[in-house]
Length: 79
Image (cartoon, rainbow, N blue to C red; front, side, top):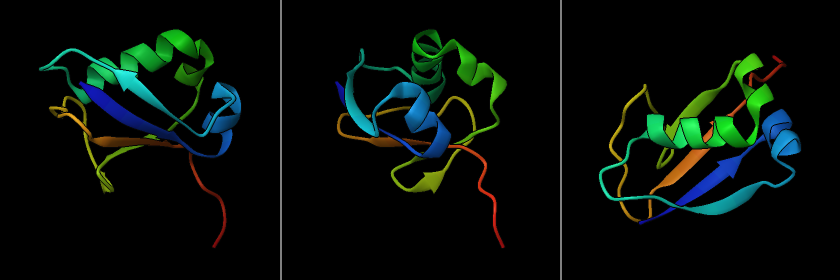
């Protein structure tokens, strides 16, 4: 299945792109995707970040479906 992955801020800089399509096996979760990304960007483990699925913030282990959009957000500053 194809998952649309979006990266923002510092994470986009670390990944050197703002979006990509990841092919994953059926039944995989957001935690599986996160582990794939951490293998590609090991330094991401040192960054606090949030994950959204289809524009809603999620916790670990959310089931992914074909065509889902998953976004990785670093902490934002400002007021």
